Image (tube, rainbow, N blue to C red; front, top):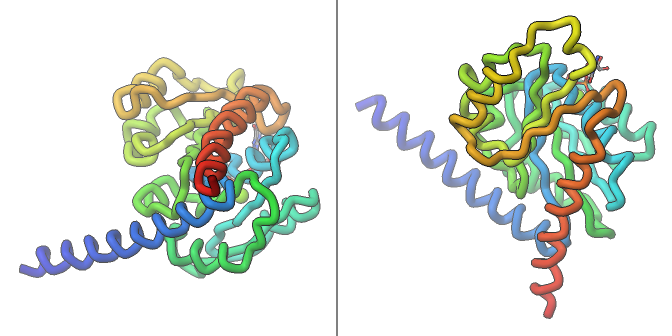
Length: 227
Ligand SMILES: Nc1nc2c(ncn2[C@@H]2O[C@H](COP(=O)(O)OP(=O)(O)OP(=O)(O)O)[C@@H](O)[C@H]2O)c(=O)[nH]1
Ligand SMILES: [Mg+2]
């Protein structure tokens, strides 16, 4: 009986969250803004990836930084001239749609472009909550080990693009790419996977091309909406 009640409450929380997420998504689609939910464990290079993508991107970039505490990443991005907003959850292990909804109401999207949302460093909870994204970008690394798709399947299953970061460290590690990719493909047959180094910048040109192509689809919708 208790389990049934608990299940219903969890379902309601997810329904409510998904409803608001849909609203956020529609709103930003209207502005011609592609919304990217960036996920990955602590220290995999989420912020480093954003810096590498944004400096190569031909479109306007907006960033929302999600952290339990601190505004270290926000200060870092702002020092580079990147339009960045901070959300602190003070405990919660993931961002949710109401948090994003509240934040985007205060952002002036004066140009079309891409809104990158760096989620809380965590490979589990963020995968369970939609925050209005068009694209779920998962950052993985060669330093985490090749077994991560098998142990944290939901994030890999839901990803629209997967980045394997820190490839400059491959010579010092025993990352088994075949095993890793076998796990990825079992969960997500067609997801594009890009190997990059946030340190050297290797591989980011292709990632940026993918985002520019993906963002065009939003623009298309945008024009259509006003015709
Ligand atoms: N060698 C190497 N180091 C990297 C690479 N990318 C990131 N780092 C380093 O890894 C550390 C963490 O990078 P961040 O970009 O802060 O990672 P994050 O995922 O944003 O971390 P949190 O926001 O704390 O979860 C930093 O010291 C980076 O300099 C890479 O490709 N190669
Ligand atoms: Mg970060």
